[in-house]
Image (cartoon, rainbow, N blue to C red):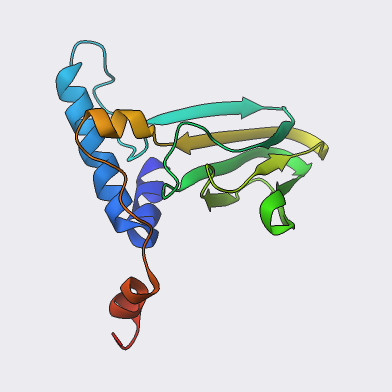
Length: 153
């Protein structure tokens, strides 16, 4: 799953993907005795959320140009991911992956119907990136996308 998440991040925000991997390698080199030897994620942190309502919040520890990744798992439930700042609600069923600028956009998951809700929230700690010498890059621009997939103009 982490390889798939890395691959998607590498497409939608390649500079963040590279900065995340580089920061994690630098951190691992500094703390080799207490780090997992096979940390494959470009993200520096993960939280597992099980059967919890997520109140409206912004993620304080990330950079404004960083995408958090929310992987919705579990079984048999119907939830909504609310993004207050844009007045939107999205279906948030098991199997959903959401990349979100969590520091910028207030988001929440209110009460849901049905079964067991599990979410693995991936994030990058801006302070870790700064300390390791890999500050968070800017968001990809429209020009970037044109050069990657369009006419380049």
